[in-house]
Amino acid sequence: MKPSKLGKSVISIPAQSLPEGDVPGSLFDARLLEQMLIPDELRRAVMLVSRLLDEPLCLVRPEMFTHGASRSWLDNKLQGVRHHVCISDGGAIKVISGLNNHLFLYGLGRHKRHAALRNISRWAPELFAGLKSQINTFHGVWVKGRFLQPPTQLLLPETAVPGVNPDFYEFYLHRPASDEGAKFIVDSGEVAAPSLAEFKEVIYVPLTESNALNEDFTRLVASVVAAAYFNPHQVVVIRLPNLSDTLAGIVQRVAVAVNALHNADVAMPRVPAKNVLLASHDLPESFFAGHEGRVSMIFDETFDYWQYTKKFYALIKTVRFLFGGDERALQRLVQGMTEVFGRLPATSGTEFGVPPFPVTWNRRQPELRVRRG
Image 1 (cartoon, helix red, strand yellow):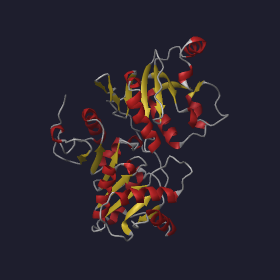
Image 2 (tube, rainbow, N blue to C red):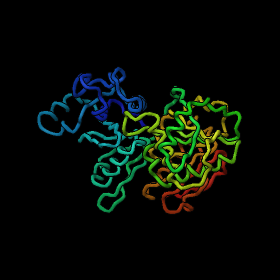
Image 3 (cartoon, rainbow, N blue to C red):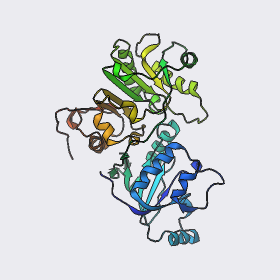
Image 4 (spheres, rainbow, N blue to C red):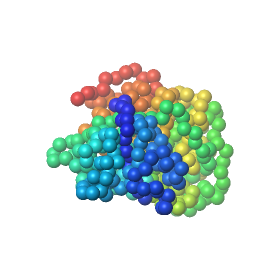
């Protein structure tokens, strides 16, 4: 699953992410994207994928260059190019005939994007048949009665990416009016960043808009939060979800998180939790420096796990990944995440039940046999 250098290639990105009036043409040097006002999550994706490419070009709307004069023009411009990487937010999977097509997905934490990808998987699964590989994902589809899962290439940053210092708020489950509780949390003001040295265990949960609507995921997180109320030696940090409504403010984001845990129907005190905090942004790797072996994470496929390095995951105590896809895709996911985390899962392949269920990787666990084939 290790990435292979693709050489001279062309990439395509969601056209709606490009600033109006700032695109030099249908095909341009991908390095110009560094100067454009594109979303940060897309910028991270482009920077990461570019490590595989030599002199990458960027093609706007490849679906416009399928035949006739437009295709002849494209073929002339792409002489020597053998690979196309579709960087997609889930809204479309675009392929260029005659080239090796690869798919890189980002930002599926937004519910509309994740739902769009599911629709493509159901309505146009043949698009996956045209892929040479998928990068950092493990998606599989049914095509004419056969399960198809393009090979996965793993690509993580080699060095930690600097992140912003998030704002923190105390979690409070205000029943029954969760929206009112969200406003109370924000109006109560920010609190100081937690001193991780004061706790024996740190649990980090990157909540997304997508998994906030997943009852299995929110039930898992709610049970962890409820337990933390009675364990002062433990701190839980929940990263607030980014929403499909890009104009949504901090109150709306808090409301999504609070409502998600409220609807999980897990009993917990109705008072602010001093050791359960809501973070406005992803926690950078530097936030956990010096606390190796005491940090755990809980996430699912909607979290862009590839923004962290392998070195970071090697220091994590426990990772719980909620798997909810087709069980035929499980084996490759387990193999891939095992490579990312640098250890085998705590449960062997023969012991998994019917999805959804959490797959757990513990640090320094004895190696257990994982079912192959």
